[in-house]
Length: 400
Image 1 (cartoon, rainbow, N blue to C red):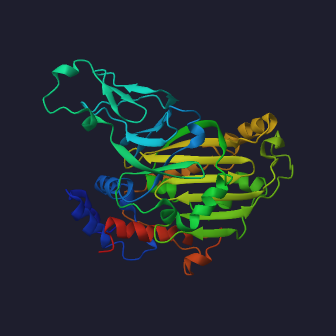
Image 2: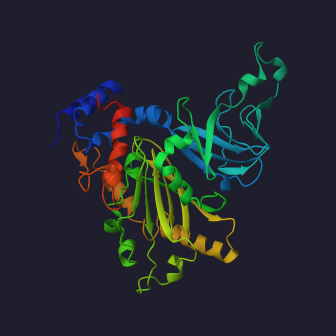
Image 3: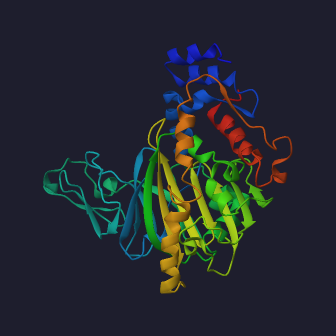
């Protein structure tokens, strides 16, 4: 049924109008008004309240910053970020913007540099963010002070080598923010965080960032042919949910693949490690990490508008890996869990099909296993998603 409040949304000029119209359709926490996936005013408010609000956001792993003065560029929402491992071995994160006229400072995605030079007027900054000098500095304005022109620095915290940032002064300590999912994060990253980078894949999905993240466990054995043909049907698993923010994790036992003729080279999905426990962790607002068979994968995601989500798939091995095991991980990584992997290839099509209906005025509804308590969630129901959606309603003001 299409609701009359849709016309209100089409003529709304500020978020308060949108919020009031959507709130009337958000009464049941198990039903989502689909306008939240397509309305540009909602998207702009999400950037302010969530991406620039009191949340921690993973942006890199230490394995990506393998030596002193190495760096990585990324984004927090629509803010460009420069992550730097300084000469003092400290990890810092800056807004990747020249403090003179606002030009994007560093354009390379990764590299090693002791200094960063703006191409516009040749202003120079070091790896700790300090302004080092510029042509014509003697003629600068009378109140010019170098320390006022350092790169804007963000708060940084770390767990098992995974580096988080936040722009908000009131974001709680990282362990508090992660709650029940702190240990699952450590588990995904082999606890000691002593990982090595294997490589990246990047994809842009035609979907809202919330659709990408809201990838429940219920769908996996139903949508993904690879789960079925390789006999990887899910069981109860061990589910953890962090309240109130809504991170969720599932741990389960990997089932060895028995060659049934479907794969031309079964060694691609062979397990060669020592710990066959699999793990998926979904950290709100929009990060997913997995440890499955021999693949270790962090999916760093960011919104690129109301209907686009960019995901950078980073694949890791461990420092203790032999050359042969490392080669095996490389072969398995993207083939198994990359954007076109054996058990993930169907996601892009479903994300696109969900976004195609985001303006139809109906509801997205949660129904499977949602009548119980979140702490009793199982691997194949939808209740794990509902805690985060309840928090989203509060943060965005839809429960008023």
